Length: 137
Figure (tube, helix red, strand yellow):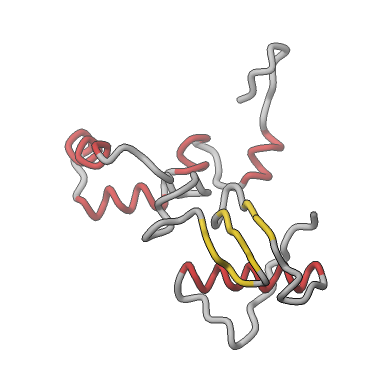
């Protein structure tokens, strides 16, 4: 399937909340695939960024996110689901405030934190090195 191009949303499509983003993604897939709203029934995965999304009749009906984008899958810079005890551990070991812990989990974790290189999946795939045993770094 073709990748979504970074085209701005139509004027009536606000991007102020995750549900609006999910609706925009559904709209882009409908446009990309030349489908009517009723014909658009998809499950999408945007590994590395955004979310997993279920679309029924052209409308977003479910996402992989919870209350915030931090919950769910690992993203480009977001940690995804984690053990709640990690919050206090990070704060005490690193001397961080609750706001700083949240900032690290939202902007310095995910693919960026795991790789120590980038949050861009394309760059990670290009720079991966695999051994003869099948292990990849």
